[in-house]
Image 1 (cartoon, protein in one colour):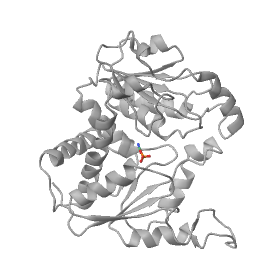
Image 2 (tube, helix red, strand yellow):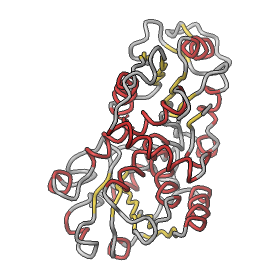
Image 3 (cartoon, protein in one colour):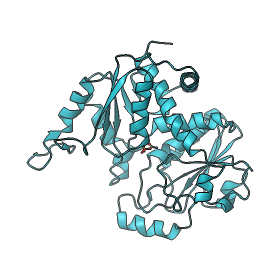
Image 4 (tube, helix red, strand yellow):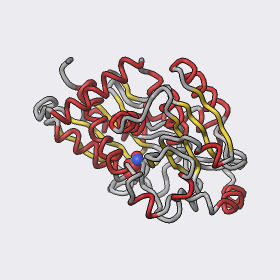
Length: 336
Ligand code: CP
């Protein structure tokens, strides 16, 4: 495997193979599988789970890892192209990426969306510019403007672990209130993942927060191939009818993308979009709550739901480590 960038790059059989490997590595650890291998981790955006789970994954497989982020860099990293570096930053990403990559057998990169221009973010211009600096090392997308494949693989495993039906299972991807305009990476790639799994997916969002047409179209095509469907609505009761799982996430207004004040004005009309027990009134009795974390308690989801039996967020977060162990094993280990 030369890159782990988008679940769309893999056949369903290949995804199933990764999920089986993740389960096998959980049941039968292989503490020497990646002995002597090194994973370079470049974080240009903050993290808890991705940062910790990749390091844990490499250690559990017998390899090692190191982390570089602007916060810890003694030099300060410049990312803008074509700049005269007469300010604070003393190191440009054009040298930093190939140097970091040269120390490892694979490199993981996280770079959130700029959230200024939707077309630029949709085209993954920043992430692509970074991966083009990697000489010849396999790479892993640890979250880019529009993708979070490690989260997606872990979420697929979580749905399987809880026996949430693929075909016939109803998956609600719901926008939730958050005080900040957040990236589209998780909602866009989660929508694709649930559709690709063959689920009946409903995107529940207020007006002005529609996901981009290309994102919806990609998911609809995946669903059609896998026996599922994708619809969208702003009607909560309609969306939650018979739902097996609700996946909450806040994201930026696509109507006002890059316009912080207009986005803020629109989102502040939706403070009541906090997932709470009444949302589940007409869902399946055992309807589950998922979220990629971090999550704001009492803002995105009520404490009783987050701490209650519906919530599977901790299991979901642990699956990040197992899913990534499978990816690393296939990328760096002996063929199984
Ligand atoms: N879900 C996720 O990627 O978490 P972090 O941002 O903490 O890595």
